[in-house]
Image (cartoon, rainbow, N blue to C red; front, side, top):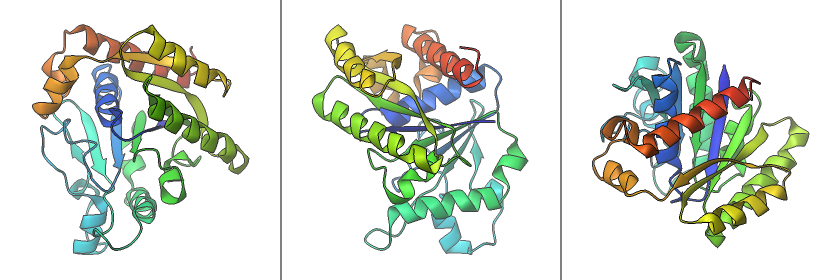
Length: 253
């Protein structure tokens, strides 16, 4: 089982990218689970046509432990199993602690045994890498972290901070850095700036996704590119990136 965690600055298009990669992997015949690790619980929204699925934390508050895995895991029509950790009641409790509790509850409910996924993708809140938001980096969850960035200065700054955290967590036997994905780039200068930052961490750019109007159209329709525009050049880029990452994780790249 391959388990990957995706981090990046808020607003970089991380959930959109992860959802399309998940769909591409499912399209290739893999059994895929996508877990949103954000109190907003919107990682899987477009995979589910705008439907907000019950979060693990909300379900725990409502039913304590008296619920089934199927109450919090939904299979989308594109074949991706979707789950959302959710978080505490706004203004009360720690969101990071909620991620820890939710992931532990999914494990306790037998998610990995019941679904036997080939790939699990963790879509983690923004650029927060402390406390509970570092949970998906732990070895029993993800083996590899991929960081999304753009050519914009604040995005690169956030990506570098995340990469530093991944590097520091090596001592705790957390997940390793798989590389950077440049999203919504406009020109080669954006790529060059991101590549320069990646070099500082002895890493590389593994994917390039252009700033494409199709992403906005799909988001507005609560859809993903691979379903709304499956034959588009952007859809093909997602497929190529998903295939590259999968082969890298299998040691074939």
